[in-house]
Image (cartoon, rainbow, N blue to C red; front, side, top):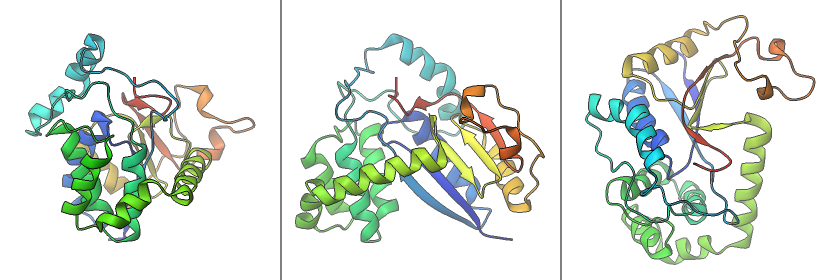
Length: 243
């Protein structure tokens, strides 16, 4: 079995991402998988924050699109959390880069999302993140410095720019499995994630892809440019704002 390299693009406050990650990781236990966790701010600091908790349309969408998987796999979650308005994730993302530098990225990311979706903590607040960082084994002074580091902010913004240019996500979560399978949004069953991973492992990909949105292609690109990639689309958070 070959190592399957997975790029998982997510935001800390994206409920689709949180639930999809839980199911995906369970499916991945049966495979040799190397995951690159890529955080992406769906709401930038210069954009307005949304009161998701009182948004009935959003609650109906969550009930339709997310709740069936929450119930099927007994995933604890506040849907949505009573954090009003929904926090920015700039500090959380900066903390993620710092945690990555010190080998604690996976533990930190899980702790941040758990704090938001389970404890209804405002993860946009520095003190909340600091407590999480210390529990994840990160140095207090180093973490605080990272949140206010101009160099790290530039690095984060450059990384997000490269993600847009090179991976072209439109919906979160976006999961790319060894360049063979691309999931844009959506939550799938445990069995379906295993099928996707099997496809990536065996390199059994379709000759062409079926795209519902022509706007997916950049100028000059056609289906032939994606001949070895199979794409599946579902509901999720837009990268231009998780509305």
